[in-house]
Length: 245
Ligand code: DC
Image (cartoon, rainbow, N blue to C red):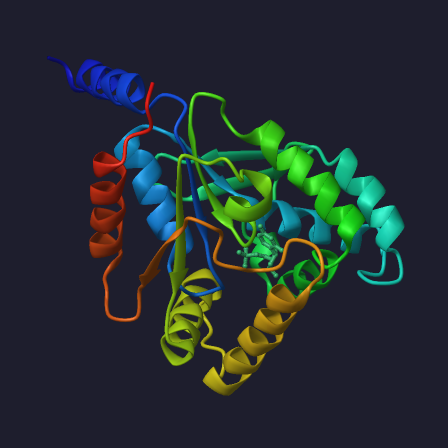
C-alpha cells in the first residue's frame, strides 16, 4: 500500500477506536507535558491542544497593544474573547501558532511573554474567556490537551487524566535546554530556577483554576523517565481503561 494511504488507514483505524477520547495532561513547567502530549496525540491519531499557547498568545497580543498584564485585566479579558488564534501541529511535530494569520510560534516563547502570560493567566475573567476558547478549539473527535487546569476545569469529564511532576532541579535544566534550542543562548540556571519558582507560586495559589492534581488523575513522576517511557505508561493506562461506548 502507498505510504500516504497506509498513514490514512492507520489514522482511520486509530480514530475508530479512540473516537471522542479526551485526554488531559496537567503539571508545572518543565515536566515534559508538551512532548508527551504531542507524542500521545500522534500515536492515537488525536488532535493536540496546548492551552499554555493560548495564554501566551493573549499575553503577546496584549503587549502589542501596550496593555499592562495586571492593571489592564478587563481589557485583556475582552481581547481574549475575540482572539483570532490558530493552532496547528507541523509535519515535524512542532506547534505552529498564528494570530490573525501571522506566525508567532517563536515570539510567544520569549522571557518577556513567558512572564506576561504568567500574570495575565491570574485573572478570573481572562481564564473564563480562554477556557471557553479552548473548548471551542478542541476537536470533538478527540483531543490530547495539556496545561494547568485541563483535567480540573477545562474538561472535568475527560476520559483519561494525567498529572506530571518532576524534581525542580531537573525541570530547571530541561527548561534551560528548551530555551537554548529556541534562542541559541544558554540562560543562567539560577535565573531559570527563580523564574520557575515564581511561576509555580502563581500557578498553585491562584483562586480560579489553580494547578492541582485533578480528581481521578494518574500521577507520573518524570524525573528519571524518558518521554518514551512516560508515553508508554499513558498508553498502557488508556488501553486498560477504555471508556464504554
Ligand atoms: O505551559 P506554558 O508554560 O506554555 O504556560 C504559559 C502560562 O500560561 C503559564 O504561566 C501558566 C499559564 N497556564 C495556565 O494558567 N493554565 C493553563 N491551562 C495553561 C497555562
